[in-house]
Image (cartoon, rainbow, N blue to C red; front, side, top):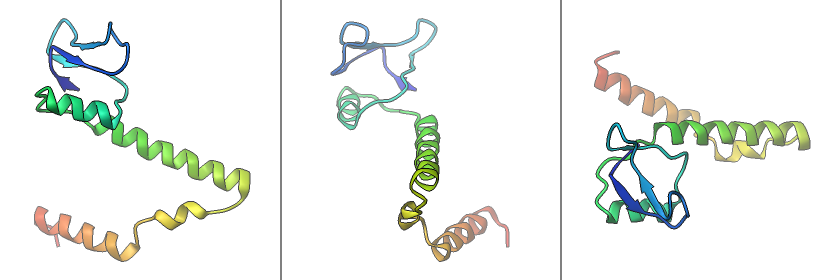
Length: 101
């Protein structure tokens, strides 16, 4: 979600402009490039919701892993995994902030 009425973009979307939906200042768009993200910041956008983007990125990586496993029979994708010890620290920090043991 972008909070803006009209922003410049490099694409031809809506005549070269991103336009908000008529019922709010909300702008729905499936994805933006890093360059467009910089343009949004420079245009004064103060809030960009990335939840869906993060979820789709994670699912895209999962699909890439599944293809590698089924098509090549390899697990090279495992090289970028987070170490279990690091996950343990992260989960402990989250539990500590939440007041859980």
